[in-house]
Image 1 (cartoon, rainbow, N blue to C red):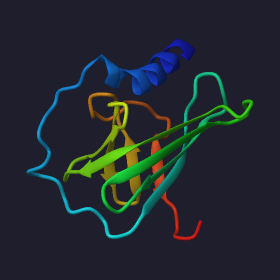
Image 2: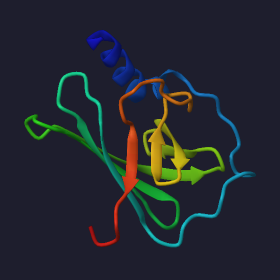
Image 3: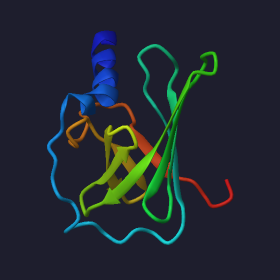
Length: 134
């Protein structure tokens, strides 16, 4: 089970580097929100209690993604880039070219694998909206 979790976490973070299909989302992109949208959640981690993920979608198409590894010595990753949203998915492209995908849900976002498909697991990969001012 631990090996499966490690493979899953590695594929989530390094899968986009192995090559993704490039496609033009410009024709199906929904208008960007007029205000900052912020999401937060704790996702599974193979060698720690979890990873607290905070995603801020900013007006103008920029995003900030922060990952903080719980119960570790202040290990964290910070990433920025551009976002776009289609009817089926939210696409994040970092300034370094890495891609992350999320499926919009009624009450948040669900992280997907490196190809944009749902992760088949009983663990939660959901980010919930954070109230303004939080």
